[in-house]
Amino acid sequence: MKSEFVTMFNVLVGYKGEGGNITIPKEVKQIGDYVFKECNIETVVIPEGVTKIGKSAFVGCRRLKKVTIPESVTEICWGAFADCVSLEEIVIPNKVKIIRKGTFSGCKSLRAVVIPGSVERIEQQSFWGCKSLADENGFVIIRNVLYYYAGKKDIVNIPDGVTEISAGAFRYCRKIEKVTIPDSVKKICLLAFIGCKNLKEMDIPKGVNVIGNMAFGYCESLRRIFISDSVTEIAADAFFQSDNVRIFAEEGSYSQLYASFYDLPFKKI
Image 1 (spheres, one colour):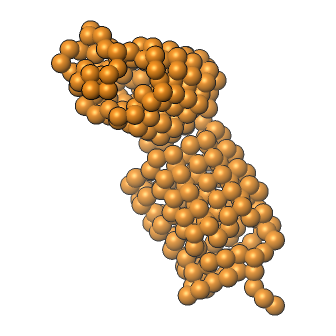
Image 2 (cartoon, rainbow, N blue to C red; image 1 turned 120 degrees about the vertical axis):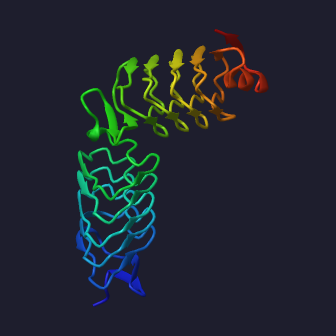
Image 3 (spheres, rainbow, N blue to C red; image 1 turned 60 degrees about the vertical axis):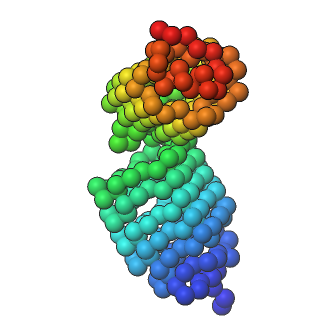
């Protein structure tokens, strides 16, 4: 009988099965890129000995509820489980050092994740859209990074202690009118507030150093943004298509130079 798994030199490169509950063969040492993309699998047992889960290996497996990952896995590549909307929990093995970009992005049913001490870095958008991980105020915060806002309030107060607003954290939150950012925040990443069309004002407090690409893009109602003198880097397109914005900052600050260079309205404070 022909196997539903296609392997090449101990790398799983294809899957021809019908889905359901599957166990990957023991001879597999790596799972290749996109192998299970949009498959109808429901549970997966990955055998001990597998060391790598490839890029977008399980992306779009909408019926996938449970994955057993062995301790032998040292690398989970970007987007590996993105848009697995039925996935409920995940345990990251102790040898994994990096959770790559978008690994669990769009996993809206994910309610529990165990991250071991071995993980040294969690990349952008790793938990974007994971609304079941949100606290009572709608925030998905992991290791002091705000990855996603699932709340419905028009006035939002980001908790003190958050150090970074991750990429796309408030993306297209159209109801939001005002956001209070605590002094603990150091970085506002790319696309952080893109498409917040009703956002009217924003204060960037002391402590923030960086405002990333299109962080406030397409914020058509944004008219006033106060930027503290701690900010020393603003992306060229940070306010892309936010045509009504006026920057308020100290005279001689980086923000004044930025406003002058990009011909944005400026008012000193």
